[in-house]
Image (cartoon, rainbow, N blue to C red; front, side):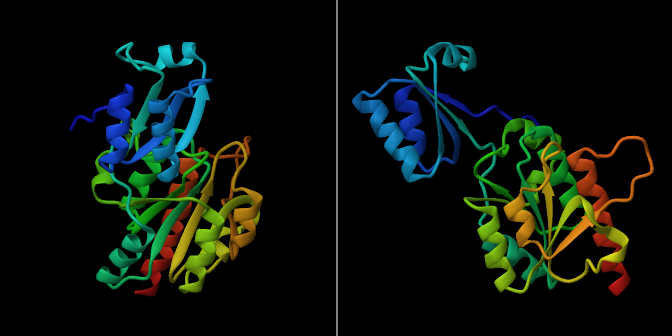
Length: 248
């Protein structure tokens, strides 16, 4: 299956994309451009809480595929985002306790695609990503997920910490991956659970980590001290699968 890169160039095209309801991940605007049409586009972007980045003309020229960007370019999601409630409903329909992946600062689309693939194979009901400091559902993510994006819903939220707080009110527990945590084999990872994975450089952010109920570490015996984010997600996910199977 082939996936198009959903790049939208030109003022009319970008404005129509917003007005038609297409999910726009990022908007790039020529720095200093303040005419009427551009103001209308920026207003639509703010209404949809789209990330807006002001860049120099050279940057837009480099990104442009057509050379006719007219000072604005947008990147649309290759797939529509779900709502968090849709993911919880999918768990209810299966009669299973919710199992979610929450990704804090995963900016590499290959990592995101690989994690979505793992989430699907581990039986997770969905993935939640933040709007900022995160890869969106690009064509690269779709390809790397090896088709999992067709089956595993991905929700995008404004604030990951607030989302965790709301889900805890609905009975969910959260475990995050961190080298300073308790060995994963000693934790009870059954029941309604959210697995929180941070990026390779900084890990899970302090605020998100504070919202988690448990901190899990992966035993490591080698000479280096960290795993690729998607590999860490896979290792922890399958410990959760093992414990869930043990309950049946």
